Image 1 (tube, rainbow, N blue to C red):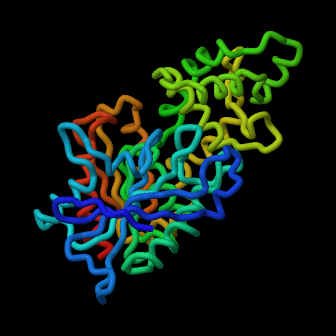
Image 2: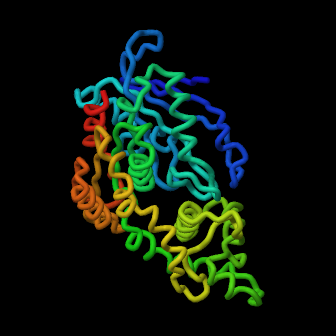
Image 3: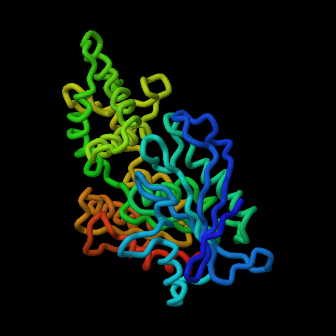
Length: 356
């Protein structure tokens, strides 16, 4: 299924895919997904030319549609692609905008028994579907992914775990150094969840010491899903809940995942936190050196005023990659975590040159 939307130079189309991987997912999120793809100027589906393809992994609370929608006082991503092509910085390439939004506000593009198999959805389903539908160069040497924040994290992790699918990745301000990025966010989230605590205290202490929900997380989610306009604190807390479901899923636990803190006392549960740290890129890269060395392009950047302090993790990540002799390009810039789509003016031509 295609719906055409005119752009200044390229063309945005709408595709629809029915996923088997996401069918009956734990959150009952849709398994039939529509998504956009940008086709470069001169694209001819019946011609002989094949194109490299890039996948845009959006940040938390986003989806591919949020990058192709109209944007006030700025370019959306298709308009940015049009400009880069007109300036001669980006040649013929297809760019795909997957929809991986979930009821927890998103995911980290990895498989989780509490959220769904979104890594498999991308690599085992969406990539083959796009290759069968569009005129792509259907091999990893000509395929890459990029993203910011959770999307940058996803790109980095996919470079580690799925290098047989991706030939290059670009990581803009991707989550790294969880002790800074996430651990410092938990106190405010725990305080917010306190308002949803149950009246009974009979088994609360034991359950919370194991990182299990005593009902407050479930009550919070139920209220949020019925709200029309969640507050900023609601979204911040939801993000931490989503990360717990991502990094420490447990089918036997309430809600299908564990919390890394005793939600009453705020004490860190070391055994649970170790599950999080296993997914931290600053630790992950050492276990996947060969895969990372096989990439044709690895781009990482971050603003040195990032309000989530991700620049510290980015510096550590780059240092670890250098120690491991993994070729990569690392840049810092004067910016925060917000409003940095202009940095794709650097990363996308870099990926294109490596993957064309």
